[in-house]
Length: 627
Image 1 (tube, rainbow, N blue to C red):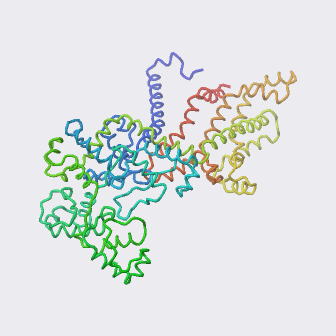
Image 2 (cartoon, one colour; image 1 turned 180 degrees about the horizontal axis):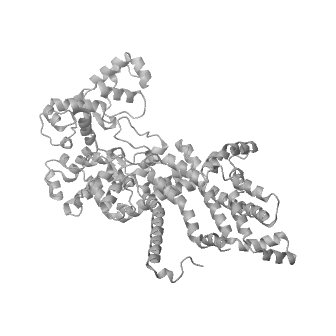
Image 3 (tube, helix red, strand yellow; image 1 turned 180 degrees about the vertical axis):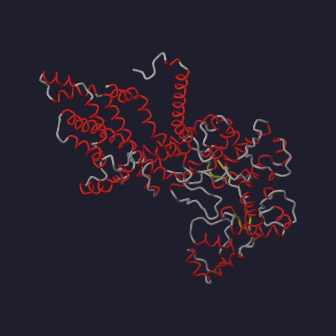
């Protein structure tokens, strides 16, 4: 019988009451749905836009936001903790953006005739530039291609570990070798098998994925942050009229201006990567340096593994010696301390670009005619880095947008499926718990409901008393007991403590008590056994409450973390929740968006079960009340 009769529902008060109830229901739905939707949207972001917390991330519809994410993707390596490092982009763009989210996009012309000619020449330049003068831009597809190529080469991860001296558990954890040409002392280990194979892969990359190594921005940052802070102070000492630090050019040789020369000398002696230095002139100063260090030729020959009759026969290497022996150490020490500063020449990709333009056009006038520019020399022509990025973005915009939506989920799935057996363990555990829970609990509840045991009340009270204490109270004794039984790191340790539930038995007993007694009396008169009555009468009528018990069991087992984390320390026995926790720890402070993707992935099975089973779940809630 309804609380409010049909006639009463037409009154104004009833309508207002119903409206108020609907408003509260809608507000409740929004309150419960909003966090999930926010988690879902955050799972498609990265370090650029994670802090925005929008239900619909801007890059879905805003090309400027998408462009910022693309630049972040290209110029950082998220797997080495550099997802927020904007220095590579600032070095090429000659900007001072504090973070990728603060980038103000400036879109150069990429459609004009001159712009197309510049891009064509620039891509030709990058395609023939030696590997030591450029780094690889990051891209998800590139990493997948690299892993696929290595998997084809080695077939088995153990063979790769032996060949590369790695300790990887699967190919999904293989990363690119460190490639940092702008680091002062970095030098690739050319005899390394991994580096040799990486160079082969690197040589096949298209120009859009090649980032030239430039020193000039590093030099202006050194002047700004370490010496002058303000451009006015630099102008006062140098006698110049620069408006910004980015107008300052890094000279290839010692500048004429004494103050600038002093800064240049200090920077070259302490900051310039050795691989971008070249020494010219005679060997007199170098020989004197070696004599002061070694004293006699015998000691020198022992370190250099030579057979010189005198140290004076040693020649000054023009470039940094290969290998990691004493000649390299001495050459570096000589550059840092004794080498005449006039003999030091520095170079990077910009000099190579000027040489390329010179060989291509011969005279600046020819270049200006093709580009529509007015440069006085080839060295004044900057590399069209922004144009290259913009051109690639316009031609791959939709693919980039879709990639950003699924990339986090791709990482999570790769981790879950390939890091141990978390997914398989969880499926086995859930099925085992469903089977035991729907067997042990109904049998106990049926016995308490069907038989008038004198101590049934005490048994039920004891079962309910188990709910009075937090689960954490029993973890230590439970752990010690299972340890004595030798069940740690096994499925028995996960299944045994949860086979029986006082709450489930209480709910089932109450439902069984509501079933008609006449059915059991008729079955008893027909000679049916207790097992037959349980199977043919109780179970068919109890499907709704069984569905509720199954759902609770599934949710508690699937979402269980603490007990699984304590009882199974072996990664081979981790469940999905434990694996997500480990994934969160490995993602670090900059991986919140990855954690959101992992949590969304973990929430989907529960959500799907509820959506497809909500009808029978509601029956389990309503049917006992009706009875």
